[in-house]
Every structure is written in structure tokens, then in C-alpha cells.
Length: 607
Ligand code: GLU
Image (cartoon, rainbow, N blue to C red; front, top):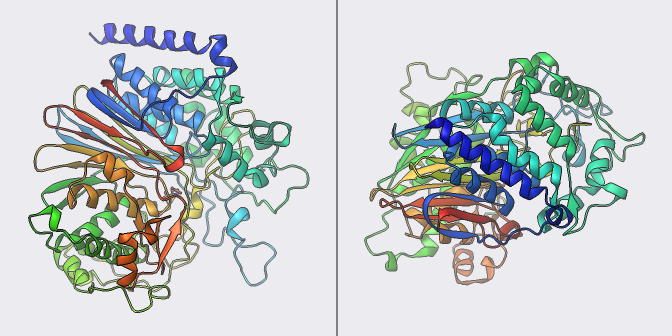
């Protein structure tokens, strides 16, 4: 049975390769116009890019499962969305295995090398210990690079729950890298936006700024070096990356960044060694489960703050009665309460959350009913008097912390220095004919990561270590071998009526507020997944003003929130999300963004 399936799949992959080698495609492959929303049966894929979505659908059609499709799709995104994701980064995968009725999470987060210290981003020229400027210095250097987790995460997911080998799952992405694809508006604008810092690195300039300029929309981009790297992974497995020639090239890049002779800004080097790569391992962790208005929501636990912070926000909100009649809901009160719940949840996140292998996080207290209801009581009918300057203080979960090994540390006082504004990262969802579901967020941190392409290997290294708080003591302070706290929040939820939903988003710490907002749209306001994703975003991260999608501030909801005292700041893009919803009879609604980041792409196996 398995052999027949593999035969069919191999044939499909060969056909894909053959098709993609055709001269027409090599000359000017137009991006197929996949819709952002798709209905159907038998499995689905939603991503930000139609070529990646197509790769996933091909895998499902050839008999692969949701896990196979997630890895093949992510590998394709590493080619067509190289500034958001790839093997130089990390991510978090949430998997629902229908037959076993289990949710599993895989932590493929980057890890600090043994040389990491709290002052790793200190300006070498400063006598007062000032940090390097965040942009471009702190994000573009060797010290910011964490040991990548993505190749290991793909291999682990496939070997545990997939039916394909890593070699098979990488084939479509190899074809895309080697045969090329048409540059789309996102690729072109992300290259242009990074042009200044990409010129600091020979390897990046050569790949992404041929003739010194970004490629224009419609031009064909090929990345044979990345094709070669994927082939190495296919032939030798992840050892080529963590213990072989790719690893040696990574260490060389980190220790001696491939700068031009006179880079436009100071580029510091990092201390990652082959031993750091050798010691990397993904973690299979229990999901964070939150029950909310009858829904069971499974999210990512630490070192991501995603599942915990969205969970805290939702538990705070759950105590507000929504009544029986959706038509009667006062939407401005709902979103006012969301803003306030987010503010409080972020105060707690910034104070307590960090890598659980390094910090004793008072999770039981933070997640207790008593604590969240105490937080809810701090929400009034209006915004704080001066929202612009107001910062909520962290709550004290310790009285409700009945864990047998309570934290002995004092309550943290260090205010987090926050720089989590990114639009980068990518989220994908997959489902298969068996009912398995994957919700997977992956990243290289900033759009364009560290800016450093590993010479000869065609992929960009992450700058994930900038997600640490460069302050000590702090639960998220950099330490050797530690994983920086993330906001990524891949989510799978089960409705009381038997529907299964998966969703997630990119967007730095706005990931949390985007995912929370989608949950409220689905679970409080009864929207279907496509509308829940397309709806305007409102984001409060205990940072003063409340960010909203541009235009919301002048509409009826925006005016009502302003009347409640909120200071709304329009933002060009908050969270290019994707999601899907499966009805109990198997009918699927898959959805990507209709507009944000140029619109995404959703397909089902049988429309
Ligand atoms: N590094 C971020 C995180 O892990 C994701 C980057 C982004 O989405 O901008 O939370």
C-alpha cells in the first residue's frame, strides 16, 4: 500500500519537475491566480503564496498527508518567500492527528550558541554599555544568529508523523529553486526594503541584487545554490546541516560575516561553533490548551508566548457575557474589552515568560481562573485616562500558583525593551483526507533575517536572538543554549459543534493580537474563517496607543473606540494570516488573506 502510494507520489513529483523544466515556465512563470478562499473536500492548503500552496496540494493529491504537505509547502516557501522563512530559521508546528485524536507541538525554535551573553549586542565603541542601534546593526550581524531549527523540525515531523522522506518532500522546492519563478510584488518590495543592508554582504548582494538592483515584478529569479543545499539535505539528511558542510559554512558566515570591503554600517561577528549546531535538537512539547466559550483551543507553549498570552487574553474575556443574540452584541464594547485584555496579558507576558528550560515560569498561577478573573476586574468601561502613556503593570500570579515548585525569584521589575514590530514570518495550514491538520508558523525573524546569505548555499540566516530582552535579570535574557521567547501562535481549535479550525499569523508580537482577534471573530462573533481573517485588526501590546488596520480609525467602530478613550494608530499591515475550518461532514473552508501582503492563496484537493 505504502509502496503504491510512494510510486504515485514519485510519478507526480517527476511530472512536476518535468513541467517546471519546460521552457515556458523557465522564461516567465506567471504566478497562478489561486483564490484566497477555497471550499471543498479531501484536504486543503492555505499560505501567503500560490506556488507554495500548489506544492502542498500536489503532495496531498499524490496521497501525502497533512504533515508531508506542511513540510513540502514550507520548503517551497523557503524558495519563494526567502525573506520570511527558510532553513536558516526556526518555527513552531502544531499537529492534530485525527486517528489518535491527539494534538502535538514541535518546537523548532532557534537556540543561542554557548557564547551568548546578556551584553552580546553592546556597542563595542560605547564606554557606557549602550546597545548597538536596532536597525540595521543589531539585526544584521553574526551575533544575532541563533542555531537554526527548521531543517530538524521538518525531519522530525516527517519521521514521526509523515509518510514521505525528507528527500521526497524537498523535490518540488528543489525544482522551484533551480528552474526559477516569477518575482511577485511581495518579493520585489521586500528586496527593495532591504536593499541598503543587503549591500553590506557580498553573498546577499550577488543573489538578491544582481547588477546592484532588486529584480522587478515578473522577472525570473533562480536560486541554484539553494537547490544544491536542499539536494544535500535530501541526500545526506539533516546531518549535512548540523554536522556537515552546510554547518561549516554557517559557522564561517556567523564568525566572519561576508561583508563587502567597506560595509555601510558596522557588522559584528558571532561565536557560533560546530558544537552548537551539533547539540541542536527540536523539542516535542505538550500543547497549551485553553477552553473558551465551549471551544478547546490548542496552541504553542514556551518558549513561545503565543499560546499562553492569547490564552490569558481569552480567559480574561470569557467572563464578559456576550448574551444569546449575535445581532445584539455591542461590537465596540467587545473590541474595547479585547484591547484591555491584550494590554494586561502583554504586561504579564513581558514580565514572566521565557525559555522553560531556563526559567521557572509561574504558569499555573498565570493560567488560573482566580488570576484571570482578578485581571478582568481591572478592566473598566473605558480606556485608561491617557492611553498613550499608560502601561499596565504585571499582575501577581504567585498567590494562585499551586505548583509544587513555586518560583523563588522576586517578581520581575525590569521593563522589557521592546522591538518586536516585524511584518516578517509566514504561517501555513494544511489538512488531509484523513482529517489530520497542521498549523505551522516559521520565520527568520526580521524580513530578510540577518541579511546574510550563507555564501554558496543560497539561504539567509536568521536574526532570532534579537528576540531576547537584552536586560538582566529577566526571564527572557540571553543565555547560552537558551531559546528566545517567541510570539508565534500556530493554533488548532475544536468547536462544540464538531468543527475543527486552524489559524495563525506572522507579525512579531502582533501575532498574538492577530490570533486573539481571529479567535474572537470566530468564537464571539460567529464569523466563518475567511471573514475572521479578512476582518480589520486591532492590536494592543501594552505599548500605549492601540494599532489598527489603516482606515478602521475613521469608521464607525474606530470612532466608537476613540469615544471610549482609545488612541488609535493606523498601521499599514497587521498580520497576513491563514486558516481553515473543517465541518463535521468534512467540508472545508480554507482561507488566506484577500489583501494583506498582496493576498495569499488557498486550495482544496476536491473543490
Ligand atoms: N521572531 C518573531 C517571533 O518569534 C517572529 C518575527 C515576526 O513575525 O516578525 O515572535
